[in-house]
Image (cartoon, rainbow over all chains, first blue to last red; front, side):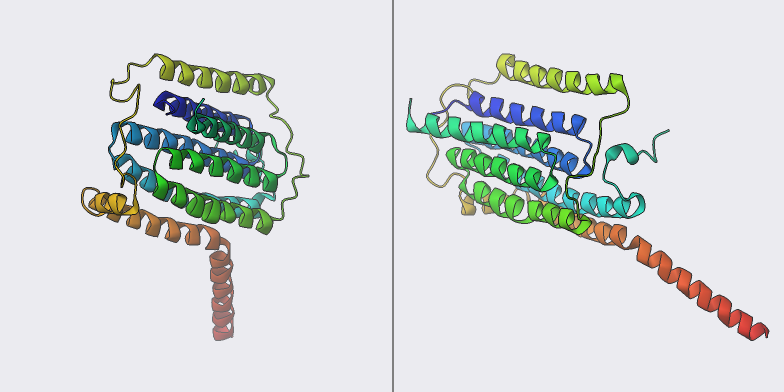
Length: 100
Length: 193
């Protein structure tokens, strides 16, 4: 039986890779995918805790996180399409209209 | 080394490999495919943790729907990955972002290694009941204890759909109202004559 800490470390490493992606990617779409990866890492931790405690509540929370991720992807991709129409680019350095 | 451990190590390596390749790829289509690889490996971990239903949902909803939406947008925008995105112009920022990311990962691993987790969580896992993580158990929880949260999720999805449509339609609305204004101006002019 694999100990739960192994799953937690896997989740942490995936979360770290997602954070690295958010920080270093210049491509807006890959940046969004890194956020999805971080959400999934949190899901893996939920599932691991749920299994080790024998309580299935974590599965419901994972379901809710998946729904939020779907909603976020829909709105985010709509924003990408809209900004691409105006700027002809998906480089995030060119999306600094709100930067003071 | 038991069979379980071997499966876990393989799927963990594949998940980390897919995630790493995702962020270093230049071509966004390849990034999406590597993320799908990573998600499939994570679904294997879910099944190992006897979350069979959630593993299936992960593949159907994520790999099947959300990532296909990403692919669809990439095709729609006609991105070939040849567009030179370049590096951040700020030299300090270029160095700092790697430092911050590596420090964050080290810190998270350190927290997991040293945190005082209750004894029930560490060590040997509880014996799973037969129906743990099955569709019926998750559904019972979702429609009893978490009913209001579940309903709120429905509202959230509705808001997201409306928001996405409004965001993606803005331009056409403006041109439409502009055309209407021009028509109105024409009418007023002809009325003036």
